[in-house]
Image 1 (cartoon, one colour):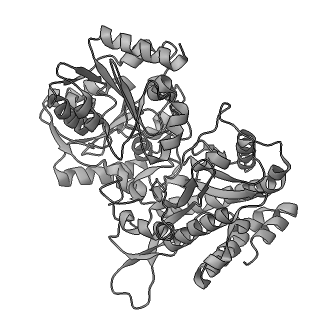
Image 2 (cartoon, helix red, strand yellow):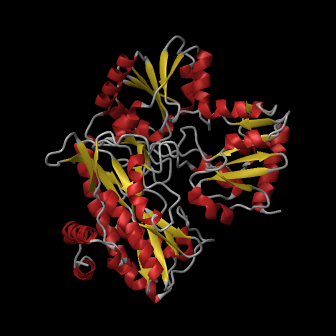
Image 3 (cartoon, helix red, strand yellow):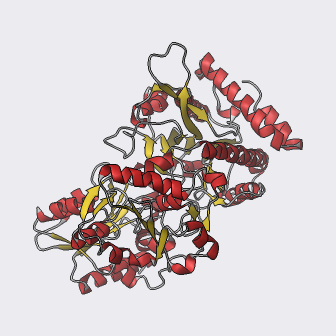
Length: 597
């Protein structure tokens, strides 16, 4: 019996012990995080799936795994189809699957600390239609059979200086207090890890690549707060930083604290808070108001200090990436290198800045057919050599005290094909169209998305991921509420109006299954646009990422004059900003690759 078959068997035996006929397994933690600590990687442990988004439902006689378009190929590589049906969430989500596959008398379990209250309500209704029941478990059955499940991280917290945040925690909480007073709210639950970190100007190391501590918070209408974090993670310096307006409690004490909220009006974010918190408030007799966490939008709109910091971080990071691109363009065609060795070399260059705190996500180092896997994650089992005639896609980023970076570049190893050059140029045209866009205030990311896809659509092709996501300031590389995607009804955040100060990615792509992948990604800052004679207020993007494109993949015959001018102007700016940090052969190479096309 294979490892994953054995784990599935053990889970089903545990379900019998708990008198359950099924169980829902999301990739999630108690904070509805996208990236979770090792202790919460239950789906990966059970199935082998290594993506960052997905879920499974295990029934007595069948099971299904649910992923989106980014992982269509990856899930089939990593999860055995003998044991799990592959389900696209674009066609059938977990709730619809329960309605279609549960039977009268079935009892399907869920962990109330891993799902939103809205999901629970809808899933219960779906199960009831077939005579089944959805019930909350008191012990997660996977935890019961995961014998070597990691413990929660015990990494220490640290304060994050106002030199980087531009605003004190007291001032942030004062703003929240005014909001609560205006809304008639007594207290607000802050459950999202990056929101807690931002609100209190603290950082941690409990989640790989995202500098956040495992913690919850209650902020009150007088600006005081309760912070729930394991006491062994606190230092005297952090205690002093938090001050006497912040009361400290153990991480697991939140529900006990909520039991004292009878008659209080409490704001809870339904998208970022788990069902267990709603249940605790309901049992306490609190008045629950469903509102978005007040840190979310404030965190997304970067102040002047954060904007300056991210500009500096990107120039530093761009110099490191440029050194890597030169090295890879010379060394990779010689042979003897693979996806893992290139990822390690890129990290070396970033560490050479002396300022790298961590990567901002696990580097996507993908050559040949692996490039067609949008969110491919290389490991020792999947690792393949980088060979001539292939494209090499590297999507990577760094965490620096002054900013978070995320950039994708593609290198041609050896001579690229005409098809590769055509697709790269189509992607580049879409990238440029979005980069130069000017749009009225109130415009959402969903309204801009077609700009990046238009040239691919005209040729009958597309890409199965969003075009842009928000990015934090030494925080999460994927940050809401803003997003550039297909439409507000399809992807959360695409209906959010863009505002000056928001940072987003601009990353159209093209993926040919089994052959190659292309993505060109820069980060951009939304800013006010100055347009002579404008009738109304307009916005545009300031480019933040500076690293050369791959000239050998650009088919200039497919570009118009304005697009050629954009490429030349961009490379001129890359040379101006990155050049002073390079010397010798690195600088000579950069001057050559940034020469006008």
